[in-house]
Amino acid sequence: MNVSYSRYQDPPPTGSLSQDIQHFSTNVDQLGAKVKQLQTEQEDAVLKGDIIQLLSLCAQLAKRIDTALKAIKEQRDVSKDFEYKRYLSVFQKSFSTFQALQQATTGIEQTQLKLARAESMRRSKRISAAKEDTKLLAYPTEQQAQMFAENDIADLQERERVISQLEHDILDMNEIFRDLATMVHEQGDQIEHIAVHVESAAVNVQQGNKQLGHAAQYKNRNRKLQICIAVIIIIVILVILIVILAVLGGLGVFSKN
Image (cartoon, rainbow, N blue to C red; front, top):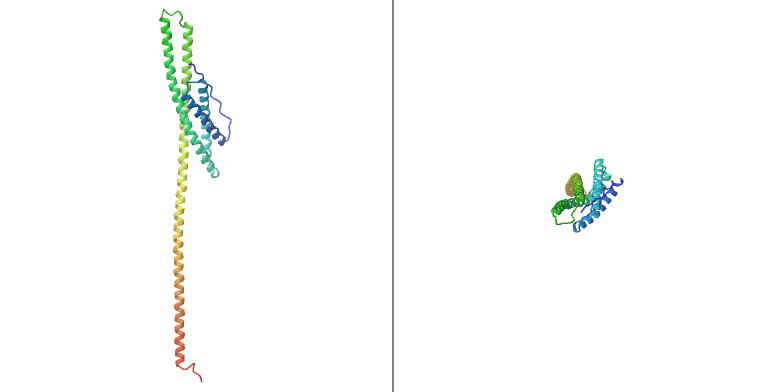
């Protein structure tokens, strides 16, 4: 069966990072549905053409998104930190799905290439056997046999070209996967760094609370001590006054003339 594949689409017009990620996710969903259909149905040239175009389009979008994410990271703009994390999270999920679909499609293509080669060899043997069978009144002419052979060669070459392109794109996507892993790891380090600061702040707050508690206890003890001293002073003064009054009374200072 001669399969003709559609040409790869040109890169989409430049859009915002948010739009690119949205388009990427949408295309990955469409790609998933078509790859599933390819796995359950017989070989279909139109379906394969659509899959190849979507794979190429997603690969181009992934490269552009990866470049945009790295640019945001290098800017170190705190105001864009939340946006960066959100974009990274959404893209990473869709990208993992895309890589799995890439691998699945490549596996299907490699299997179909083996089958096509085997069919080409069987067709060649049947033509040779037909020529040698003198009982057959009709068999392919040299021109027809050459045409069959050329069609088979063109079909196999096209399949090999598609597989080669898929494998090249897979290598490119592996680079992006490593970039994403680095970005996610750095985000994890930042979160851990923040957690350490939060924990340190919590410890400092606890220590501050303890110190405040100690200070309050010390203040209460000082207040009690001050009250005790004041009571003692008052008692001493009262005792002194009683003694003085007693002495003066003994001397008749308070007796009437």
